[in-house]
Amino acid sequence: MPRPLVVKVTCGAEDPERANQAFTVAAAAVASGAEVSLWLTGEAAWFGVPGRAEAFDLPLATPLAGLRDAVLAGGRLTVCSQCAARRDLAESDLVEGATIAGAAVFTEEILGDGVQALVY
Image 1 (cartoon, rainbow, N blue to C red):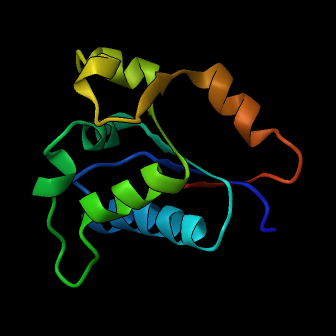
Image 2: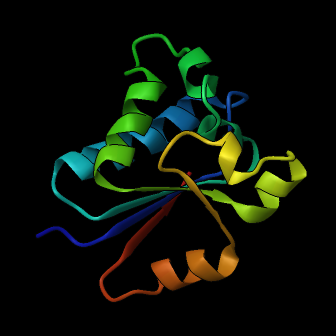
């Protein structure tokens, strides 16, 4: 069994390749059977809102909405609580299955035994 993976993406559409890479790695890890937690922070918080990932376009890349849905199907998708608050987002504004949590939960996840954390 692969070790757990926590991926934190800190950018949105303003840095499309980096944002897409984070989602790609998270979805690939889910497909490999890893326990995956994808955190959306900063401008990436918008990708937790319905329609935002669908509107994202990066040539030659897997559609972001499909990657997000793969993570939701086999892992966890969390939007940073402060980032959500700064954007007036509540859990009811997010795609089904996404949650909002803060630094304490993120820290607990990344300090778990055998966890690999990546930040994009």
